[in-house]
Image 1 (cartoon, rainbow, N blue to C red):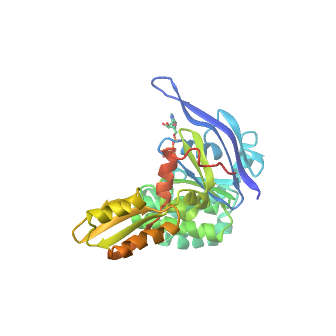
Image 2: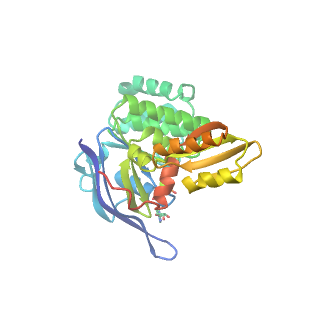
Image 3: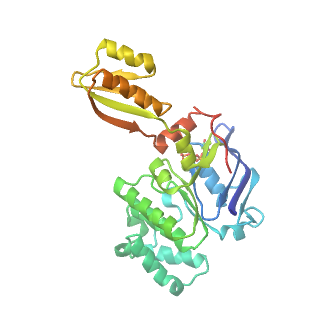
Length: 327
Ligand SMILES: Nc1ncnc2c1ncn2[C@@H]1O[C@H](COP(=O)(O)OP(=O)(O)OP(=O)(O)O)[C@@H](O)[C@H]1O
Ligand SMILES: [Mg+2]
């Protein structure tokens, strides 16, 4: 696959105004994004995500390192490289607050050399798709935050760039609007061949939209891998078995002898056994004991990991050695 964004050995420090000391925001980051790929850029607060996004879209100059977009160097040929990128940054700074919804779309399309006439139907379609048709004559400062966010994404789409950068697209939105934005992004991913780099603290959004994630912490990459691989890496064979009634002390001992890691939570009516089974054969052994002892089983559930738990484990460095870095 062909990389469209190539980030090599990026470094960026900021000077603190008061103390004059330097903070390293991004410390030697390299990764590539292939054409048509949706990459999640993740990390805890202050990890360096926004700084990285701003360097890619040319708003912040790196101290060292290089970025190329479609093979064009982002520093020596900045304007040319920027033609391939649209960014939606935190706080919707890519909108004019004193222009209406439609005027914003027209203005930014004009910036990319497109006439009002040329984009008129496209704007109508976008307003329809983003559910903003009834707000087209409203000034941006009168829109709700969710509407502004949707408009900012629409503006980025209208520019027609191949690469779209989205910094926290669902931040601060209520559940319903957050979900709507997620659906819109999913639709874009499905129907348009865009390359997207997205940062988010919402792991459902990431799991839903991204194939691969680059996880950074303290300005350094800790993981660069496919979501699917990371999920497999942290997959657990943990089961929770609900019993009708409770175990006798002998039965509890008997189970513990065979499964030392077993956790038993007794209750008068319904007790719970939690057990991590490394091999599926062990399930039979467990059930042999339960059957022999005539212990009534109510339900069996397999615990599954979600991407949020996987992310937390990676960021806490629980498995630093276990995670290979893939391209
Ligand atoms: N303009 C600036 N001046 C000084 N320090 C800055 C500036 N912008 C960012 N930083 C510092 O750089 C580091 C990385 O910040 P950045 O905004 O890139 O993190 P982030 O991963 O986007 O965090 P968040 O999840 O909170 O958005 C932080 O320590 C931050 O305080
Ligand atoms: Mg940020």
